[in-house]
Image 1 (tube, rainbow, N blue to C red):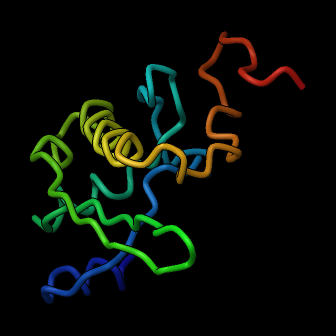
Image 2: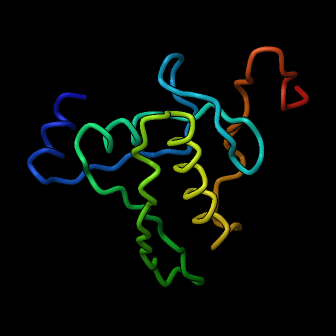
Length: 126
């Protein structure tokens, strides 16, 4: 984490995948498409600590192997808020907006909801 902080403080760029289930202690439960998902706090913490601008960067695969179109969207300022659940909820809303642009291109097979809040039943039937 220290190297990433140094990079951002020098004005550099880093990439973070915000739609993963982070290790225990590295996330909070926040809505993702209306379902509580264990979501990483990493991006919002970095933004809060460094003032770095958060951008959503995603690729649109073109048909017939013609390549990709890169899309870049600014994140709302709430992603760097002090309330981690609200900040991560804002991050997740931004990821949802990107996915909604090209839903067929998202990796839906990733078991995003395998970890559940205490007391909630398993999301997946197996």
